[in-house]
Length: 202
Image (cartoon, rainbow, N blue to C red; front, side, top):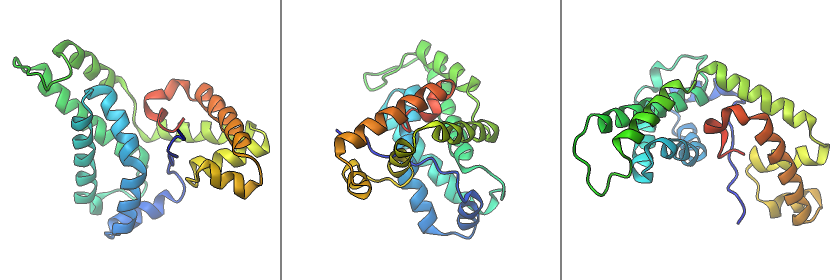
């Protein structure tokens, strides 16, 4: 099955923030569409339960919309979203840590909740981290052969399916898959220190 393309938004970040601050629902919807699955994946790694993870991500977007007018112009939207999900996850895990009652719907033990809480508290989701991730992505893209770079960018940044890429570049789907495999392998090696934040992307 073809992996769903994920966009790492960094371009025109100031335009995104400006749009949110003036209440542009189109920009908000675009962020929701591009980030919901990725943030849910991130949250689920720590809270385990997918429904809980989805609810925490939804809470994050509610927070984003309610606080949109107060966003600083220079805020990195990647860092803001991941930091807010991290905050909601830590609150959830903190509740589990002090709870004496577990029912069959709770999919994480108190011990695991404590370990995951610690892991989250140590995870850096600041602007600096996402700036470094973007730098590594740019540098890795530059190191790829031209055709592999084109395929990777069309898939991950323009959200095109393998069939569409094959038609646009006049190559076979198998060739697209080979180029994507090369690009993803290079990204996984380059971004190995940031896996919790980039796994859905690579």
